[in-house]
Image (tube, rainbow, N blue to C red; front, top):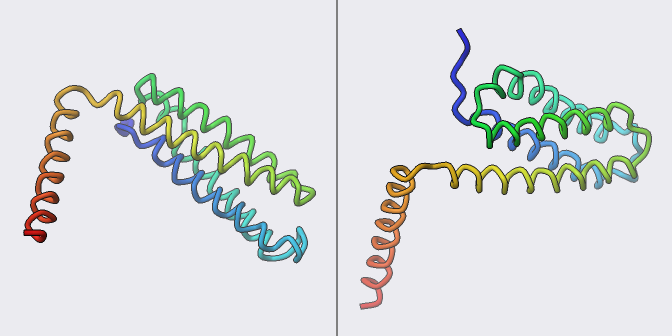
Length: 152
């Protein structure tokens, strides 16, 4: 029996890309130690593990198929980008490639994050959007009363 996936794929992809971006950005600190230093190699291995988990667990064809069309497009893009990053890291030969991978991964993470949240908010539906707006309004009113009460 297939598991039900609401919006699990893209948020998981965001987590994997966020972690990979952080790992790759951290590698820059170890440039002087050389490409084969344990710190560099361990971080590359951790990044590869993140992308492998993304591709083989979170963005499987079954999981992607269960997504709404707007989110499916994002998941497929994340899958393509993950494969590209993994291939770069598997054929790594210099720090310039690492620096480019770090920059590309960071940029893609920000892009994916923005697209997913905008898409999610655009597809909430009227009832859910109204509930959220009501809750935000309540919180804002409570906070305003708290602040203004202290000023009196």
